[in-house]
Length: 466
Image (cartoon, rainbow, N blue to C red):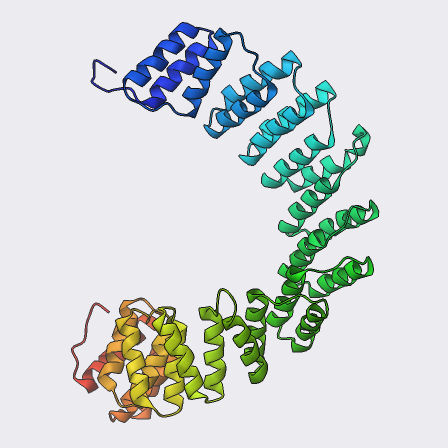
């Protein structure tokens, strides 16, 4: 390397230091460590650790199990699995490791996703007959991180045979693992075992399983587990209520969502932004204006304030009710904060168009183009429909060409608006019907026929590349 003028880096020195350390050549390892410092290279964690070990060995200091665990974790973090395993084996074979030390090593491998290595440490622990609940807990966690869900369950079931009693952490970890992996029925079995063992003193494990049922759209099972939780006198927290309220808001069930809102209030729990957002989504979906306004007011007064989604829901509700001033107020607020998105603008455009206020609608369309917020089919169709109704045929054609260039696939609504343009320009309904038939027979050639027809009547140059 020196002859080729390729200066060694930290990694180079680290390899040399580790190599000599492995062969107990302390002098050479220390030599390369000094060379690295002289080259003004900053030693990495591994190099510093090796240097520390040399110093401790030379001074006859004993390396304790906590130092061993830290070094194993460091080697794992550096991707030096072989080195980490050799280091672990050195202490394991010496027989001077505690239960806490085995647990720390299992956890170190498990957190990095090295499940097989974690298993090997667990097996060593079995050999030494030093098993405690700690080793089982970290191994179950490791299986969860490695997505080995059956192994996690089997390991739990084997605890009794080894004379180890599961604690709250064991149950909680396995329940969380199974619930997060979309196995709520399995998680529920362990939740009931945890309840029988008298280890449930809060609603956290119940919340994990309820959330899993909701995620899979099994609302009846979620409600049944909620009722079971109440029967055991376990108090729900704001997160449990939030999960159920959001679930029934998504399902459009006002009555059931309101039931949990009332229960939450009765329990003296204040709402949060998640719940307010869920309620706004629900109330705007079913057209409950007063209730939506109350929820939105609470959301505005919260620490985070109203987000774009909830504000859009309110604009949508106001446009349905033709409450222009209220919709404009929210729109302008979002616009000032730079939070108005494509959907926000599209709703305002539709509202103005429906009310026949074409000038305002045209201004919204222009802003959408200027801000680059014209990107999806719905927005293009809204703008096309506006231009065709307002007699702005050239703008309609230009928008259609932009749409084709952007590879946005037009639909029936698109061609309905373009048909209005052709009809108002004197093209017969029969000719338009033939264009539609040609499009449905062959989408590509049919599209070209529409572009050619529009270019001809509007006297606009036709781009052959479209």
